[in-house]
Length: 47
Image (cartoon, rainbow, N blue to C red; front, side, top):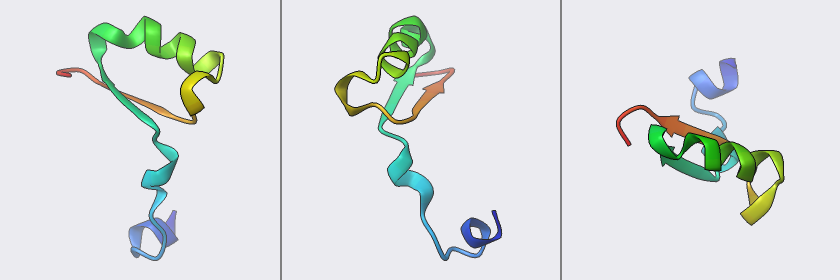
């Protein structure tokens, strides 16, 4: 965590998908089934 805080590493490459809340169920299936190269999904409440 300290390396991230200090700016020595950038973990943003781990987030492969960013979606709105309404697409949550589909995004979960994509993550669960590792479709479309999915590593990590960020669900935003306001899209």
